[in-house]
Length: 237
Picture 1 (spheres, rainbow, N blue to C red):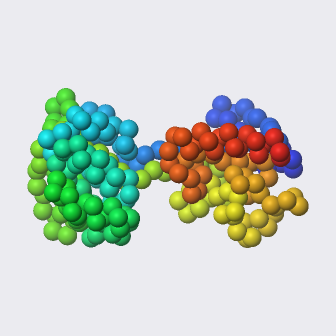
Picture 2 (picture 1 turned 135 degrees about the vertical axis):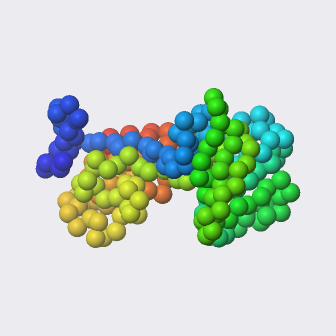
Picture 3 (picture 1 turned 90 degrees about the vertical axis):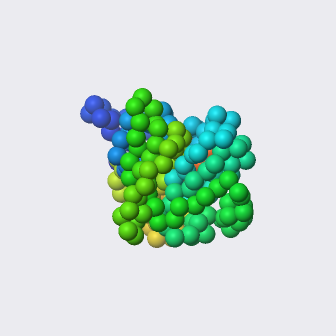
């Protein structure tokens, strides 16, 4: 809540905190795979993002990568270069729709990477750990079973910003817009003579750092760097 020079944060236990300056760095939550039983195998064969990739353990194995963006393409290349037989599962018709062309070219030319367009993972199967997946063709509905112990999911992440409401400008995906990315219409109520600092939101004194910020590089090192820069701007404010 914006109250003159104060920014008031209300906590879930009913308490409140008032401050003049605030850094928002809540990060993101990975979007989860909707396949049957996928949740049961999270961390036991089903992994989100790159954190679960131990490429050496996948050598000479059939692995599946879900997604069609650059992160999925980079993971597929990394796994294939370490000897895995990689299957990319994507809902769209072409990798080029979302992936950089240099990655598309490398994937299409790699002998250990296959692309399953217009498919989705319908189910995950296994006992104590993942042992296989069921693929579904989106056009026909036909399903096929495949044995695998490794499923890597790259279907994006959602910022943890729903609680902000309309107080701070966010983009259509919910990420906080900062600095030069703010439009004149976003700053109609901006009360200061100076323009927003690089990592400052549409509210003076409210900054954003890391994955939660629109346009940020989704890497730990980048988030740490933004946090330290934010502190400098907070002191200036």
